Amino acid sequence: MLRFQKKYFIPAILLFVTEVLIAIFLHDKYIRPYFGDFLVVILMYCSIKSLFNIPPWPLAISVLLIAYLLEVLQYFHFLQLFGLQHVVWLNIILGNGFAWGDLVAYTLGIVTVLLLERTANK
Image (tube, rainbow, N blue to C red; front, side):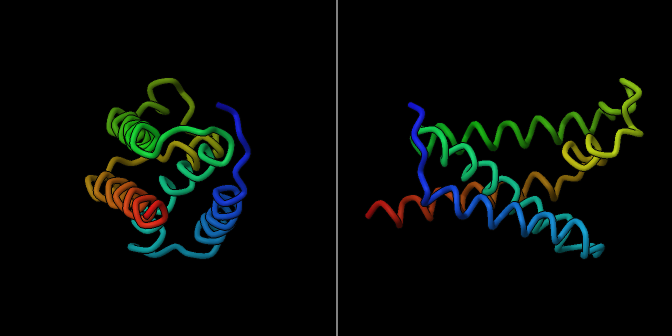
């Protein structure tokens, strides 16, 4: 089950760098919140896939459910409930505001992953 796959590791690194650059330099209303969320599920997928030999569909659905769960936690102000709202890295990783558009961005990111996987496997 554990197997390093360079073809997923390199995109994961590139996506991580892109996400960091977006977080540091872009403070707009579209690219950072929506394109960043679109990319983050692809980053999660590639990161996991680079280390584990998991079939595309189960992994994609798992990543999507994790992203949805984190968004639901934001809806219920999870960090504030546990007094963690001042922990900067948790705010960055978990986020701090629910948005329906984020769920759409996550979904589109996973659909993109599955389409790319299907194309690559033909």
